[in-house]
Length: 285
Length: 178
Image 1: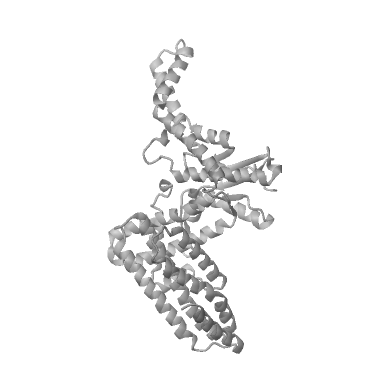
Image 2 (image 1 turned 180 degrees about the vertical axis):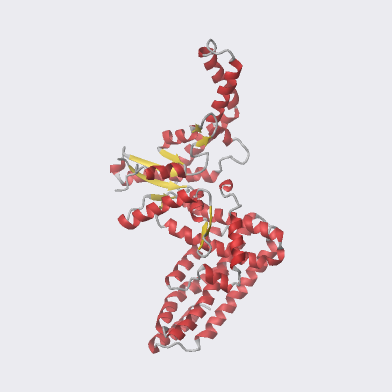
């Protein structure tokens, strides 16, 4: 079985730390993906207590982003309540501060299972990787501009060549095939959609993760050619997207490219959880 | 309030440890500290009240984090005072004096840090978060960190209101903010 290490995106840390359990009322406030992400965190916590091994890495940019992200979420709530009733602002501030303390307590327990990465963005080695990551995304963005025409051309060629003689309704078939291909390219299309564009910070995080993966191999020669590095993220510009069309379609061109170019396997919380469940991770070393 | 102040408290605590009994002279010092922290807390609130939603998102988050840090300092001060009273009643005097002796350096450093950072204009979310975490870790180590129930009690927050707030957080789609 291959050796492995993993890293998490900010959204995974957020989803595993935003919860609150009322002992008296058995009510739980939690995020949608909480159950899976907290299972992952507790699993590696148990391994760390038992064997003293930290399989997780967090990059400096992720750690920096988490501080802002949790404040941003609470600020939105604060804003909502401020607009509703300004007279109780001080009480609301105290309440929000109590929530933040609880979230921080949850988070500090989670962070114990991670090693702090050494990939500082100012390091020229990380910057070199960043330039490659940026170039890759720029290519995808450029591709997304003309993707519709390209898909139509591709599908038309395919259908004209092979299927026209068997299919009576050529136009309908073309339309379905085009839709299927568009769905398969969702990851790329989303890059040029307003609100879904990849941020510089995300590319920085990916560059740092790639650097950490390289460092793992350099530090432990036995990992060479026998090593997987996972990056858990719920962002579509990293991890493949499942779409419930045409009986379930997966869009993964960017995920595949990252894996091919940099050897980092981006996956969603559910996928990593499944690896644990199916005992596909070598947790001995 | 710096080195002489810490050494003043320390010599008092040394005396308590040696005599195995807490005197009354610690309370004016702790009350003085509490007064200072409450003043800072009020200033932080007033700044937040004046500027909230008027400058920019970053400034609002930074001010909230600052208010949150001062509040933590205030809650810890209240807990220290209560712990002293409780220790006296339970005759655990030397333990609490020893704990405060170890903790007071973290406390005063954090207070100074917050005073200094208040005037700074550079982005400070990361810096305050780190220092706050250090402060909370050491407060936890020496049993001066409030749990949620104590927080609610000190700030007179009703459990019902707090529960409602927590429940309403479910409606914020965190996924959408990623």
